[in-house]
Image 1: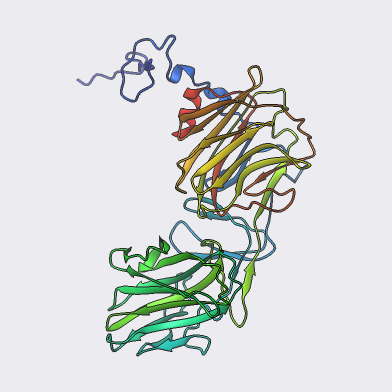
Image 2: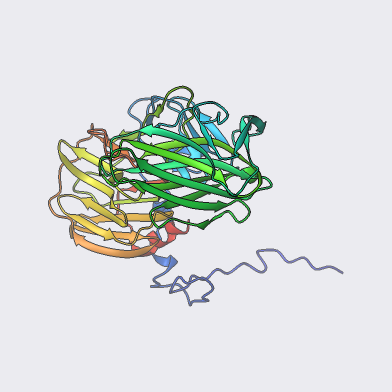
Length: 438
């Protein structure tokens, strides 16, 4: 005879670890320092919660019945969806990638005929030939070209030169490539005509998905897409010696064929692909903001901000989140140099992160009004605590900018933001750690 045991007969017992460590049995949980300190009901009720996966806004105070988060971009723009395909977003349409919501400053693709390697805009060197429109490109259209090499004893390259003013800036070239009977793709960059020539080469392997050799003067990157495609890029710093021409080159050093699509040459680091035809094309910047009113506490309230970020560009000055009052940053999280992220809530600034490498990371800043302390966390771990300095008035009509400094249209980031939350209380260390794994 079967016996039925109900939950009432054998109730489940949940004990909270005093340390909060996974797997610890713990005692009663009383006076514990782990989950006992997590105020879940408060965490579930932020003032603002935006950029969740598949949900642009979750909690936000609107300025009217139908207005809350503002996202503008004056041009269309491409992105890589979570399935590894290139898609095109309409004007003002947000772009969501696997790493988060893509935010970029403006960029210009100086390469002409970016998908038409058979045309005269591209010089073919050696025995390299181009057969146009042979297979589906990363955007699903049959516009990718086949490049073929028949003699490996000479240099086999596609080449295109663009005019530029050599001022020591960074320049990035990129291509979408796919292996055929050849799996080694050469990338070569040159600055020339008027100054000291720079000629650097790196080699990418489509079988392994990594660069098999890298010039010490190149910063290379790889993005894997669906269907065996890769987007490969090399960035150089111009030598500021008066060169007037930059030349991008891509080719083969093995006999056989491979596939190519979507060439791009741009100043600064790699950004989303910009198709071109007979002239260069500029993609406009993403501008993302909301009003301060009811989305950010006043200067006399505790404040906590938590979010995740991944950066494409490590050089320059990029704002992740900022609130501006005239020429004063009242609140700011800024990528200030290649490995440094600075935090500000008031007049003082805390350079809390000094080992950032551009990978996805979770950041939190917690301001306590009673002690005027600003505490900063990275991936759930406290990094620094400083006096926040003088607190400025927060004007309700001002805006919170995400990914830029919209007061003067500058400091645009190139990368991804996700899961941004603002609270009107000070998170404790356990809560920051809990949200880091949420």
